[in-house]
Length: 382
Image (cartoon, rainbow, N blue to C red):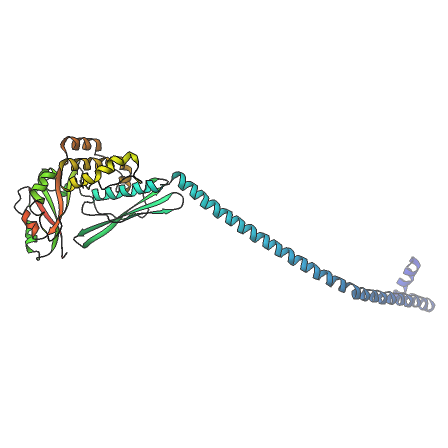
């Protein structure tokens, strides 16, 4: 479109052309419109033909693309799942492998756990003389964690008065305080003995309760002496008068003072087997144990002395364990070596006892002058 035509087109719009010029410009405009319409129609036909050709190819390509994408996504999902599963398997394997290594290096092995369990049983029976232990076990968990449980039964005849347990947790071979400690019975202290603590004597009131007890019942009594007795003196004064009773076996637990703080039992050290299996280093001890046990049961002074020394050495070598079982400053005022030396020089000296027998047979002890006081713990119908 040249400048002359543009000028004529402007004058046409302004109405300044003559009739011939108007006819000429309108003819040019008609030509331009015809050309434009033709071009538009041709473009539309071309686009329609293009649409007829392209969609078929694109649809196939889209289908292939979608299938390829689906396969890729599936493979990604599978690889991710395999990777996660592999990492999980490796993590679990490493966890248990590390646990096994830690347990083998730092945990208690079968022999050590057996020794610790038996030591806890012996110590529990020393510090809780009114109880006996018939069941104990070791529970193992991962990463050198072990839990030793010792049952304690307070029995009279065939009747269980009460029962509890002591639980000690070992972590990497060392006893540690547990977050959920079992409440154990209180320890028997010097203050529980009226003679040792300077309280007034009462040798009668306990026997009055036994006199009222029905025939055929069994009783457990606590007897406190007015002076320390040797095992033979205890046997002659308290066991012999009622040891011939056939209706019920006599059960006796003699008590000794340790320092100025505790009163504990002297359970037979000859039944305590702190080694497993019994190797050659302990063969002589094991050979003599049966003979020593018979002497202990016969209240032999030397057998009770050696048993008490063995038990005191057990305390000496397990003070950390006892502090976990009970409380931290348990031995703050006690020198175990001095106590052991005293026993070596003077033998076992008993300040009292727990004794269980027929209620009426126990009345035979009534007139013994060595009794400072007597307390009836329980009376049961066998």
